[in-house]
Length: 299
Image 1 (tube, rainbow, N blue to C red):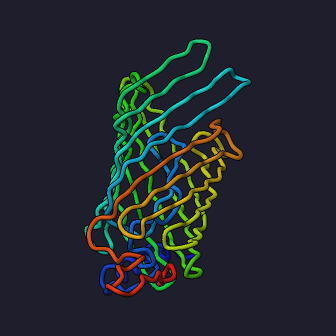
Image 2: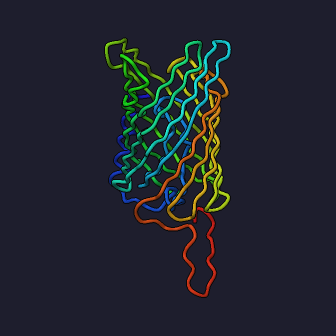
Image 3: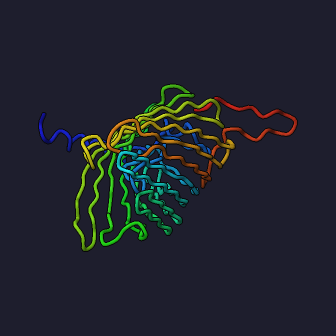
């Protein structure tokens, strides 16, 4: 293959994305508060390498979660919990800026010499650029920086991390959507200690089943390679998404590693979000004297 082919292909996608008008497409299937895209429950610090949705939106939310790590052969255990603020802003139909801040973080190490830490956690800043938006497919490029603001967790060396990926959203049916994400992750230590630069790859694929416009179930398979081991992790994630059919959304999710070097037993998360800006409710307000009807999801 000619070495210029990937560059020409990328240039063509960018030209198409920013010069053509935005038409109704797969990203318009859910215009209310219900979440879309992968289950955002990363096992790496600061959510590094999480799959991102291809469809940008403006929303604000608060989340809480925790993770349990058990390694009996090495007499090691870890319990962590965090609370975080997160938000995104759709600057245009194609550009989304997003961020996350862990305003509370608790870690407890279960070892022969136990230790605990309480304080603030990591801070994330990122952007998502939609390249393609059609009736059945949307593609976007996204990237984020994970800032080492979790001061209680580190001593001497503070890791600065970033990821970059390509996300896709695919409509199979009015009630079934698939998503995928391919990415690169990188971190380097800042401070007096060793930098220990690391580079790895991630892959996420999953499906979303919308039982109604208020309830959806999401299942994902997530993998990470080359960051700390040839196979860092292969994990499955499951989430229940509930919405009021208007601005509010609620996510209940779990991620369980199946294989790889990752020693975590499970991660559980809850996320509450509110959609900002103009919306099209899933359940329109009924006119006086007439019952409200609920259209099929995706219409």
